Image 1 (cartoon, helix red, strand yellow):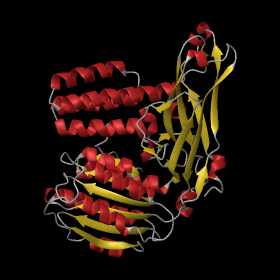
Image 2 (image 1 turned 90 degrees about the vertical axis):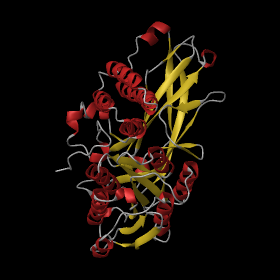
Image 3 (image 1 turned 180 degrees about the horizontal axis):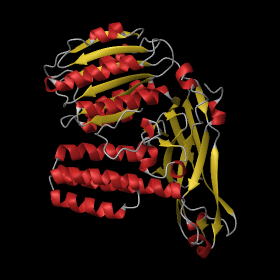
Image 4 (image 1 turned 60 degrees about the vertical axis):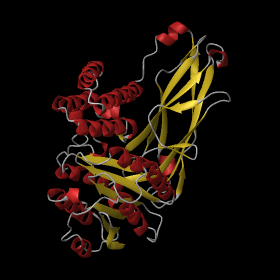
Length: 449
């Protein structure tokens, strides 16, 4: 582990245009990139990372009968196999009732954990909150300040126990503040995607779904790879501007204690946010002078829970005459992010139309979006996948695929300097799974060689 990640992790501020226009109000869009250093050679993240503590919570309600429950068990077995002997793992199952299959103990050779999964049968209702809460509770007494995470798998709608999504998400946030985070895995068409995404968002984890049980193996691989290569977690971004001005975030990031929550950061990756600041004309200095736009600060912790505070960064831009300002090019990185955020807004409109079975509007919106974003390879591939679902008139799939794609466009980790290091989707073969841009979030992809 790097002795001082605060020195090796960079904050990069990229304005969409590298100047301000004199004599008019300016809306300044700034891409904030928090870049972790490359992994130290050869790969100390596997040799030196602190032990993980995970709770795998499996829905065994009646809707999971047959292949889904078998594949859920296979996913849990894969987690057992992927963890180190010193990692801690608990197993919980739920239907109407909740049962702790195996306590939170070191994996060792994994024999006990695998044995606890034998003979798991699907039956009954869905006390999703109770299962999740039991999973979190199993991790309370695990010693140490390393990463602790509940991994919740469900294919259905909660119909027993606490049912209010806001209350459940609020509890996820409270547990995250105590150091126990939540990731969710939805299976098929029947689960409540709004609840599962809200739990992961509030709980400081990640939200995934799989169209089939086989597809769900891919998100499990992705999450385990991410956890195995984390550099920083619990990142919080704060931005300050001069008195009387306001700053807002363009991508939909959760707020906690007055700061925006960024995704946990892996080695060689970057987390990001697009900030917007409006500078009125009467607040600008004379042409040729520099104007301070904003200052940012990022705080977090390393894998041992030690606080990390990155150096405060500020952005100042020159005030230019209108003709000189209009001649400024747009920064490619910022433009790509803004395109993705605009595409996310388009997908939300598609989702609204699909939700009310308005298929002509769905078709029209997708046609318009594909023309508008034809030059962006990843967005175009997402829209193509959505158009295929629209042709099938698959409402539930469209609702899920759209909202999970929107989530990725707003909060995904990226390859450091993605615009210059990965020119197109075909060039991502060597990129870690947790950094790849998938066309369809509910479909798996081939495992890493």
